[in-house]
Amino acid sequence: MWLDAALAYLHFATIFTLFAFMTVQVMLLRGPLDERIVRLLGRADIWVAGSAGAVLVTGFLRAGLGAKGGDFYFNSWPIYVKVALFLVVALLSIKPTLAFIRWRKAYQQDVDWRVPAAEHAAMRKIVMIEVHLAALIPLVAVIMARGLGR
Image (cartoon, rainbow, N blue to C red; front, side, top):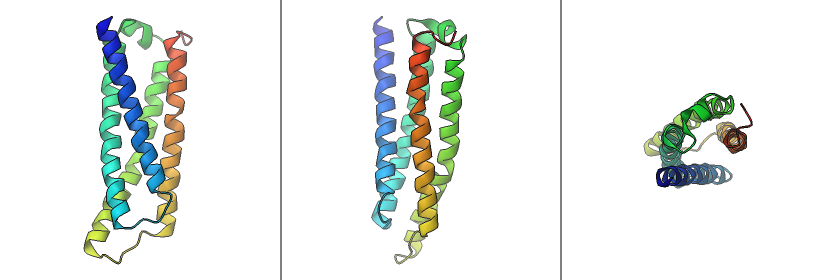
């Protein structure tokens, strides 16, 4: 029981961290993107990636070693929907990550460079889609945890 409680706590903590830094990205993308904001976007993106990895690891540890056991989770559809949503969000995050890196390099080469408005808007839209899709994962988790997908 203690292991299950510890794994649940770690999983929730990593989920909260992930959503916190995704929210940071959303907020930073709301305004003008100067060099300082672009650097902050890059740092937030590193935290998003790290916490997403931690969410994945703690989730699978919880499913495999938790009180309900792997059979409870892996013999029903919700876990596969959760993983699919997670992968879609991860794939969507590639384009903004590459843009943040490119923007940072552009600012390093030319302090007067500015992020093109269309690209700024496109990255903000992608990050918003990521957040909204990620918000569906806990809904599927509730279905899964109650055995409703069996």
